[in-house]
Amino acid sequence: MKKRILAYGRLNDEQLAQLGQDVEVQTFPGLASADDPAFRAALPHAHGLIGAGLAITPELLDAAPRLEAIATISVGYDNYPVEALTRRGILLCNTPDVLTETTADTGFLLIMAAARRALELADLVKRGDWNAGIGPEHFGSDVHGKTLGLIGFGRIGAAVARRGALGFGMRVLYSNASPKPELERELGAERREMDRLLAESDFVCVTVPLTPKTEHLIGEREFALMKPSAIFVNIARGKVVNEAALIEALEMGRIRAAGLDVFEQEPLSPESPLPHMTNVVALPHIGSATHETRTAMAQRAVDNLILALKGERPIDLVNDVALRGG
Image 1 (spheres, rainbow, N blue to C red):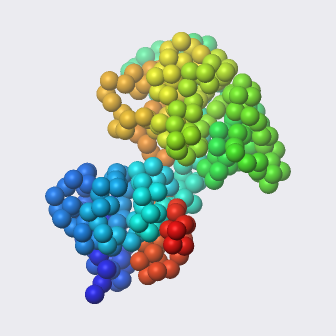
Image 2: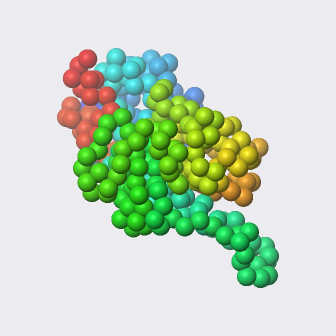
Image 3: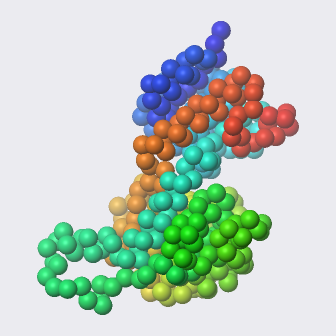
């Protein structure tokens, strides 16, 4: 008898058909909550899960005693209790490689848009208020030749750095747990302690994963270390930044502007002042949101899950210890 998986992510017909060759697939399009009665009723019979955005709890795992593997259609896995999964021998797979370049594109989009005040000035044109030549009160800042500081220098951080160094002649600084000598040679990047990076950078871009150590990594103290002319960009996770401290820094002019694709609460509350501030570019978490990348992410998740349920090593495995049996 075929194993059964529950699919609650965006999979195309070809991907569903590929899964159906090896397993029985039960789909839950538009699933918003793990408390959905049909989803809960299916959990006891599920050997695999595939999707994104659903919070998986230890209590939910208790309701799925046959579960062997979860394939998340994302690079981040803060919605998953990794230790609880590992204790149960459940493999957790993600999609770290296929969204690197697209997310880096988004990061540089935010750098450019915030520096040149693109949305603010586009609104001026839409309102019909472009009545004369643009004067100093609307001038932006150059990006080329400036100093770009990366907090986190993994795949995405390095991809943002390449755009800056090779495309815009930017000096690259990075703060990371370990040195990256190859990237230092390739890009002329210089490793800095975070405080020095904040003080020296014209643009500060955050790309670290969300962990207990990185939650609220950037707060009032860190914004105070930045240049008043600095632009802050977050394409990591919203909770890496103390949002109240960011708002205060923007309102008080401690930093010049921010480009944000992620927020502490998503979707962003209508009461948040951030999208209404002229020195903020706020996007609805579009880092990987292109047709090509989302299709590739879903395909990687499909491939991961098929391998895991066959007892083979997935391409991308978060909790390697679960595969090794503890």
